[in-house]
Image 1 (cartoon, rainbow, N blue to C red):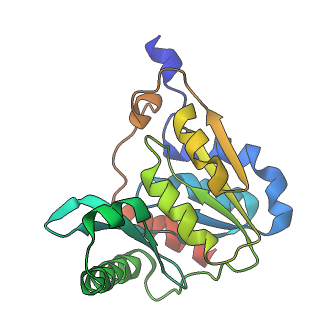
Image 2: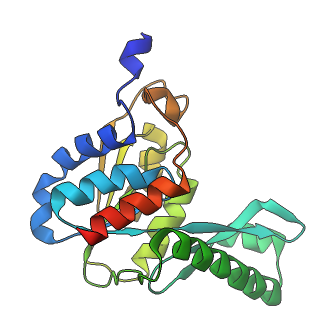
Image 3: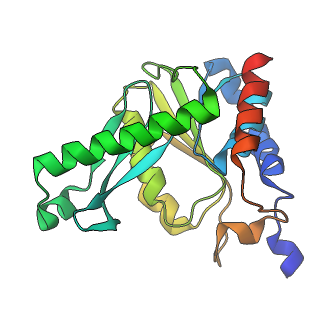
Length: 219
C-alpha cells in the first residue's frame, strides 16, 4: 500500500509526467506560472518540454488586523499585481481602507524582494491575451491557488489552465469555476497530504529556484 501512494519520485518527475499530458498546449505558446517554492521544479520541466516561458506567481496573504494568520485576502504577483479580497470575511472583520492599503504595500515590497532574489532584474511576463498554465506541486485545500487564479484572471489572459500532479476532488470542485481547464494526474480517494505521494518531498530551497530560473532563461 505504501508503494502505491508514491506516485512521483520527486517534483521534477511530477513535472515530466504533467508535461506529457500538456504536450498539445505547446502550439498555444503558453506562459508557465509556478507557485514558489515547490511548484518551481514541477513547472520547470513543463516549460522545458513545451519550450515555453517560465515565470513565478507569488501570492501573499493579507491578514486581519491584530490577527495576521487569519486571511482576509491576498496580493497576487505579476506585471500588474492584483489584490484579491474575501468579501464575506471583509464584511465580518471590517478593516479600514488605510489598513488594507498599508498591508497591500507591505506585501508588494515583500513580493518585490523575493522576485529579485529568484529572478534578478527580469520583469514579470505580461499575461494579457496569453494561455496561462498555473503550476504547483499539489493542492491540499486550494486556498492559495484560488487567490492565484482570481488574480491572474484580472490580467485578462485568453485561457487559464491549472496543472497539478495531485489533489483531492473536493479542492478541484472548488476551483473548477476559476479556470478554463484543470489537468490533475491523480485524484486519490484518501488524500492526506501532498508529500505522501512523493518519494522525495524535500523542501525546495531558494538556491534551486534561482538555478532553475537561470537555466531556462539563459538557454
